Image (tube, rainbow, N blue to C red; front, side):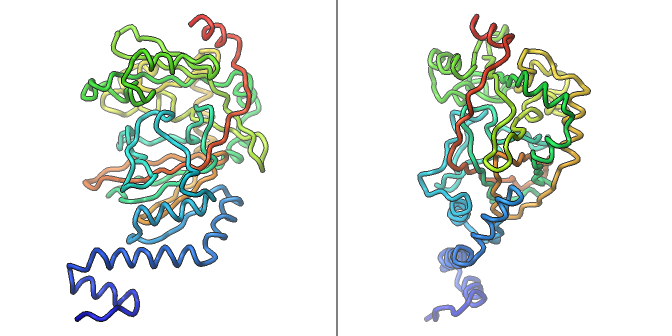
Length: 358
């Protein structure tokens, strides 16, 4: 009869010798690692680091389960099991949950061969998460490095002329939505059913045409897609840092799909996402070059391994990732904290004129 293991090494040896007990033993190991983290000063230290530099990483080890990572994330974000925000219905795509937790699959909809450009999570919404957590479940074989940038630094490096233009005009975030039955079409990226969480086109149009949220939806000329346009400000008042650049400009500009096999020859205006100035004019090449240069200068590269839990101050730090490849599917969980409402704001007259005429 097997004796109870006295330490982790003994538990691992026992798991190898008795395959039938491997699952329960691994669960015990996970529980030990998570309990050790939660009972130490690591949580308080992580919360302090999060406040100081805008992010923190808890490295729980490859044996950690998704549930373990969820418990640690909730502690670091200072929420309970009912305090997390909801992604589906507000994000660009509908995401599936992972292992019966609140984590959703962050990879949904994003081509692995393209870099995910910097963005604050849900910067296009009327409310957005204070914190976001990423839990690495399976890392890619090649690359897939997480990239971060502190918008406090970004803003201090950007020209006052460009910042003032952002303040004056804000931006339009545009997306093209297909019927979900076209999911195999080469130009399909997301469905209006997923975007608006309804199977009724009439209801989708109703939800998308909302003047209070500066949102409008129209049928595209090809009669296949809906064009959804949102006006948004690109600043938010951070509780510690005051006015902070807060946006999804690079991640929503059509140029982020440059290099994609299907989308490269297609004009930016016809790609799944695009971003314009709030008055409907295109961002110039010089303006895009400055935004990209400033973010590149502020980039920090973070390699996440299985069991790593990355928590971000979403009101301050933007995130993205480098392209990745290989046979292993990269699986990164996304968890939102409590939501923060957008402050009252007003689009430029040019946008309001179009919105009122819609």
